[in-house]
Length: 476
Image 1 (cartoon, rainbow, N blue to C red):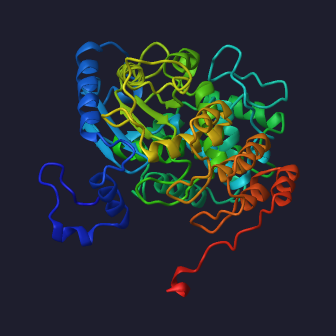
Image 2: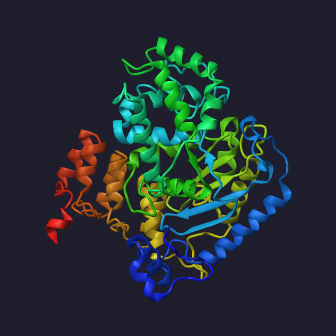
Image 3: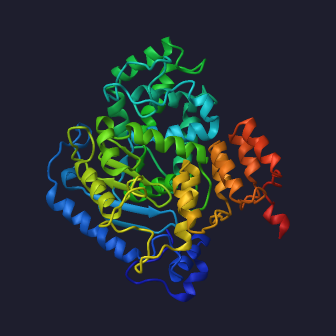
C-alpha cells in the first residue's frame, strides 16, 4: 500500500509522500533500530524454510469446499508482519482465503475489548475440552462451553457480538467486518458468498449445539437463533490473504495496536486472553503437542489458513490447503516448527539454554539492542515474568523504561490487573506518574482493568489520573 517496490526501492523525493508509519519503519531501518535489525538475513532464512517445506511436505487432504478450486493442493503462501511494520511475503500470499475457524479468535478478542472479560466469561469458559474435540456438545462444570475456540464457544461469543443489534444482522456483520479490517491495517474485506452458502447448507450440527446452549441460557436474551447461526457462518466466510492475515496476527503480537496504522484496535487484556486461549485449543486436537513443540499462540482453520503470533515480535500467516489428520495445514505446521526451532521462539526458550538457535532480536555482534531489552521488559511485565525482570535488575538494567507508545511496564501490569507485578515495579523505581502517548497513566489503566486494591496501591504511592487524550487540532 505504500508503493515501495522491493526491487527498485524508493526515490528520496518520494519519501515525503509516504504515510507516517512508513516513515517510521524507514527511520528505524536506516538507523538499525528495527526490532529485527538483520531483516534481510532473516527473510533469507524464511525463504530457505519455505523451500524446504515445499519440497518435503506433500501429504494432506483437501477440504471438500476447496476441491472445486483448481490447484489448491499446490497453493503455499507465507507472510510475516513485525510489530515495527516490517513485512515479507512469498508464494501464494495474495490468494483470498476464508478465515473459517480463525474468526473464533478474532470474535473473542473483539467481544472482550467491547464487553469486558468478566461479562464474556459468563457465557464461555477458559478450559480445554476433555477429549480435545472442537464440535463437542459437552459443557464445562459451570454449564458453559469450555472455551471460545470450539464450535459451541464460538457460537456463544458470536451471540455476544449480536446483542447490541439483535434485529440488525446486516449492520452487525458490517460492524464486525469493519473491526477485522482495522486489525488488518484498514484493508477492505469481503465475504465469499459461495463458501457461506455451502457452509449454511450443512448447518444441522451447529443448530443442535445452538439449541443446547439456548436450553442452558447460554445466549443473551431476545436473540433469534437463526441470526446467531447466520452471523457465525458469515464471519467464517470473510476472506483474507496471507498478507492481511499477517497484519492481523501482527496486531495481536503488538498488544492490539496495528503495526501498519498505529491504531489501537484491541485492548491489551483482550489480546492476552485471546493468546492464552489460542495456546489452549487453537490447533484443534493437536494443540497440546503444538504448544509443547513451538510455544506459539496459533489459530488454524480448515481452509488451510494458520495465524501464528510471536508476542512482542511478529505475526505470521501461512496458507496451504492440504490438511493433516488433525485438520491443520500440513505445510503450515512444519513451517511453524522449523522457525520456532531456528529462532528459539518458544516462550520458555528465555528460561533455558538454546545455544544453536539464533535470536531474532540479537544483533550480529551478539549484544542485545536497547529496543530489544525494552520489549522484553514490557513482555515480562505483561506476563508476570519476575524471573526475567530479576535477571535485568541483577545486571543493573533499569526497569523505568517505556516503549514507543511511552507505556511503561507499570502500565502493562495494571492492564493485566497484576498487583504483585505492580508492587514489584514500584519497588524497583518505575515512575507511577508516567503518561503514555494517549496521556494515560498507570492509574487510568488500573481503574479501567484492575481491582480496587490495585488502584489503592497506586494512589498510596502518589499516582494520579492522566489528563486523557489531547485534541491535536486544538493544540496546533
